[in-house]
Length: 174
Image 1 (cartoon, rainbow, N blue to C red):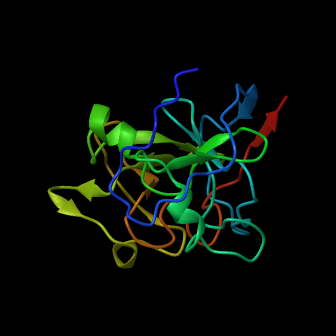
Image 2 (image 1 turned 180 degrees about the horizontal axis):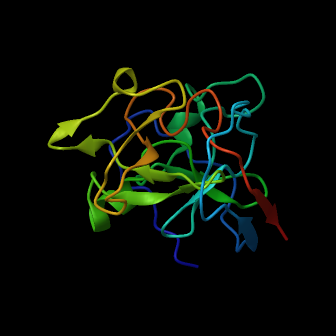
Image 3 (image 1 turned 30 degrees about the vertical axis):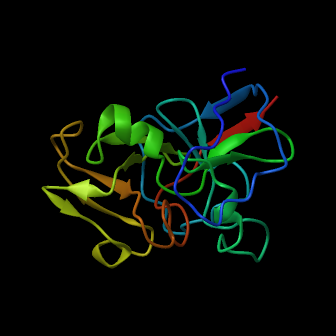
């Protein structure tokens, strides 16, 4: 196990009672994402995957709950495990920021659209800078012809807004 003891700065930190265990996910993500007029709501569980293989979850702790209490169980990298051992991010994955920066591609949601960090063109974005799905369209370093893309922000809803922008693929945890 490569578990690292908590050494963060949250004075309200409360050790998550769950432990991380190895997972085997299969993602079927569209390679050519397309806008979906329905904009299906994000489910509980994995809604995408970060470049380091850690899954993204939506902005809810459980059906009908927000993250206001659960956030205190996040480790210094803003992740934590479920009772089934799935380590995941609901908010900014600070471990990736250390390696990659806050303005780069961090992963993909199930609809195939990319997820970027909170910084863009020297500015830190907030939810008010983005649409209802927590993204916008323009050229990026990785997509020079332009593409719709999500941004992780430091404010609610953090990773994804009112559903998927595009037609989602599938995910299974075997």
